[in-house]
Image 1: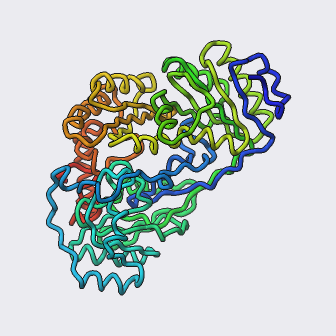
Image 2: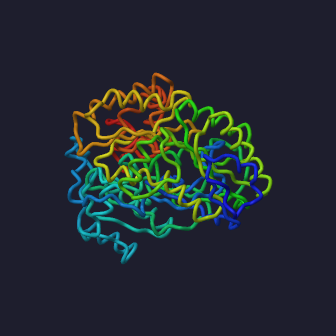
Image 3: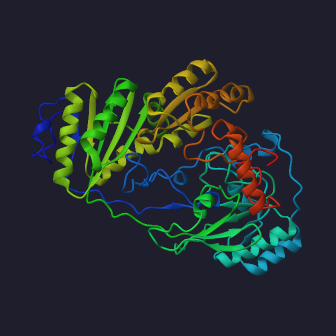
Length: 488
């Protein structure tokens, strides 16, 4: 197909019949960056892009493809209780009483939820893979209210489950038993970094300074604590400027080796304007097309890459992208592709990547793994897992953020199976540890992965984490059964 008439200046591509351009003079309008206070830990929500390490995700913000907008299809009642599926024993916390509920009503009248029907969606994770049995959800609006709640719960020995958007993927955002759900959904003030500790103490440890090297950087400890050390109630963030020029290329590659070579070439030729480099295998594309009825303008390739550029000059950026694409085609790195510059087509292409997680939920029960590995070994784990499981798994797929060395390995089956789980774990973690990777790149450990922390952290580090937990939450009331191994 030739070049679109909307962009006659792109003559450099006129002789590439394989490459199709989707162009427009309309520029993409970027959506606002959103924050996810999942499990009280200040996690930035992905898919919307967040400026992180080089070329992993856009400096701007991707079109919205949020998990919360596309729920899985099974009902809450069909989800087995976490305590039964994983044979967990309840710790000796106090049980909720009418007097407790009355106390909370006095603090936040009208924002205390006890209706079982209203509580159902907050007791089940987004994947509908784990379910708790909380009888109470609180919706504080201020740091003072959170402080009052935690001080009371600390005195009464009542367990608390901090919950943000409930979009977590490792069972960290929902109760295991009857923990009180402390929802931060009404806490939307971004003013400073405030943390409420287990005993109700409030700690303000961040101003809006760009640099502050006075003592330990405590905010990083709390950000990564998955709600087990305290509840983040307010933050101060630095927002990047929206890029004035955004381009998106969606390309097909014949092997993962070509994906890696394309990445090397891309990084060298696009430099500072490269803002995203994502990859997915053909199985991902099949599931997106089958379950979500999305169609890809590029087909017939074993692998696909999505490349985004973000900069301040459209002329400069398009010239660099043109040069890269011509090099990629002439050298045989890519065999087919399409490029978009207008907002509608950019969102359409991003949806092919962003909605893979949703498509997987329609394929059956999903075993999800979020791995960091040396880039050269990234897809070998998918290949080895696929060979190990054979017909016992319905699908084994791989996709992720190549710039970060971050692989999302997903395995689907018609239903949950202990025998299949035993075939996957600890195989995946042992494989990852063998190549000095991390068993959790960005999703955290939550409930599902806490027992495997030793594959990524030495025993000395785990012991130090346990000491932090014991010091800051001596009764263990904050998000129990999560992040650290049982007995911690």
